[in-house]
Image 1 (cartoon, rainbow, N blue to C red):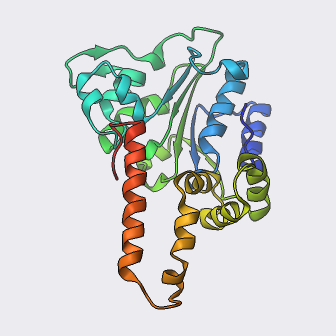
Image 2 (image 1 turned 30 degrees about the vertical axis):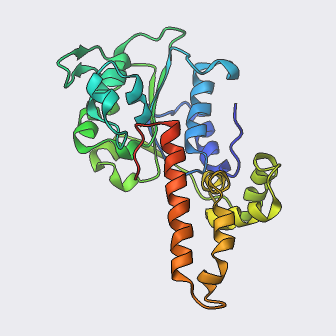
Length: 267
């Protein structure tokens, strides 16, 4: 199980609900990007399903839905489209069932009997990417899921969730990490990285380990230092040189992302 740092309050609320037998069947894990929401959702599912940590991938009663899953869809239309959202067709195939745009009628995994034990968990990552039609299609399942089913919506933009969706869920709020917790995280996660880059990334991250890691992986600290004179207006303002550096950084970052997944959005 991956350790989540700096979210003691959020995790304690989950533990207390379980201990007091008031666990909610539909949850929203809400907070800034990259602070441990998705990892916490997986950890919570592992504890509910009693899965050995190393075996949770592919466990039949843990269903994780992400926009990238369109690549493996049975629907050819989903396979070809850019992965900018979580379409209703993907929800029908992976969770709620029903007739999709390929004219196939999919069974609803959410209503199937658990394969092992009596629990199953559905995690929807980046739930804010579900459009209004998809969110409306989820309402009845969120309100009254089958016995032993837990649904977790993970989001950094709870404002994009419909009020009708939010009213059916219990919120677990995640916060940015403070400097001490960021330093503890970086000591382990960024142990082989130049200390100047680590300090720059932590300052840039606003308390988000995910953003700090993205900064390191894309070389953003080096870009930031190379633009220091431009940003501080020291030694004259070289607009052309700064723009060339920024454009080169953006282009190389986009190309790297597309080389990992050619259906990813350029946005």
